[in-house]
Amino acid sequence: MYNMDEWKHVFKLDPAKDISDEVLDQICESGTDAIIVGGTDEVTLDGVLQLLSYIRRYSVPVILEISNLESVTPGFDYYFVPMVLNSQNKKWLVDKQHEAVVEYGDVINWEEMYAEGYCIMNPESKVFQHTDCSLPTEDEAIAYARMAEHLFRLPFYYVEYSGKYGDPNLVEAISNQLSNTKLIYGGGISTKSQAEEMSQFADMIVVGNAIYENPKEALKTVKAVKK
Ligand code: 1GP
Image (cartoon, rainbow, N blue to C red; front, side, top):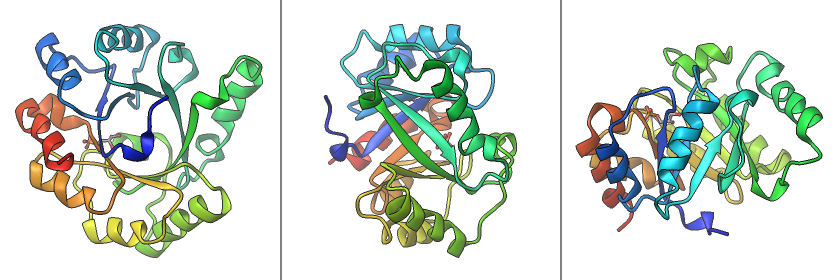
């Protein structure tokens, strides 16, 4: 339906966070390639539906990044399914997903589903703690990327620094290992130059927190990347 190969920039909106209509309008009209709806906790069906119906007034593609079964609803263009590669608990790698397929396997439209191999690199982040991660060394993060590309043939490998700007050298080293698997980078992007820097290496950059903290700067990250 859309050509994700061309996507360079996405905004991630958290259904558990408050946002004004004015900022939401600006995000939808910003020229970003897509909007991901997703968060770590307190993601409810109500919150997801509210964002979905608002964003649907615009033509921008909208994706649900599934964080729990209760908040999944039809109506999104795509569904991204995180698999946390550096979790110490297999629940976050495959069990939660398995549970969902046991329940809904007959009605899932597989064309809309994309797995994301997550490598979570910020131990201070909620998502790192929530999914019981251990911090990989650089070599280990690169090894996960190689597995995503060559063993699992995942559509996406997501280097997640949620809340903190990451190490561009590592993102570059990882990008050198990926050709079919697309590299997503997210974490701490709040300025144009950070967006530019990470998008040299990542296929797609994700801007989340900055929308809530400094929407004006966050909006500028779109043009920085999509020239
Ligand atoms: C979070 O990777 C995204 O899942 C974006 O991170 O909120 O730090 O921008 P930030």
